[in-house]
Structures are given as C-alpha cells and as structure tokens.
Picture 1 (tube, rainbow, N blue to C red):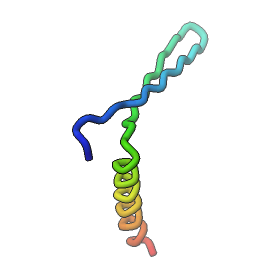
Picture 2 (cartoon, helix red, strand yellow):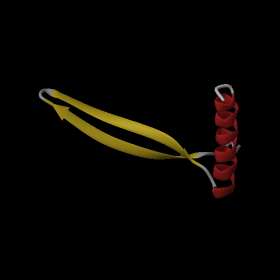
Picture 3 (cartoon, one colour):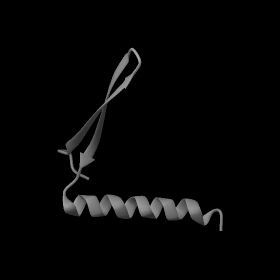
Picture 4 (cartoon, rainbow, N blue to C red):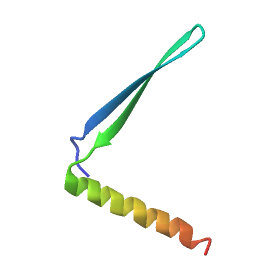
Length: 54
C-alpha cells in the first residue's frame, strides 16, 4: 500500500440527557488501484478463514 494515505473524517454528535458526546471516525481513502488491491486482500483473507468451516 502507500505511505501517504488521506483520511475521510466522519463526525457525529450524540446528546443523551446531560451527556454530550462527539464521535470522530477516521477511515483511509485509498486511490482506486490501492482500494481494489486492499479489497482483493480482504476477500482472500476472508476466503481463507471460511474455508476452515466448509
């Protein structure tokens, strides 16, 4: 993968009675080619795991 990965940031606020929480999620935003490579790798690893239970 690449060294310079940009991140998408999702922010959400939860208000529950007197509590005020701000949730910040950061997820990598890959280039199209890198994203496809990452997806293939994840699929390969999942297939390897599921093969154990067949």
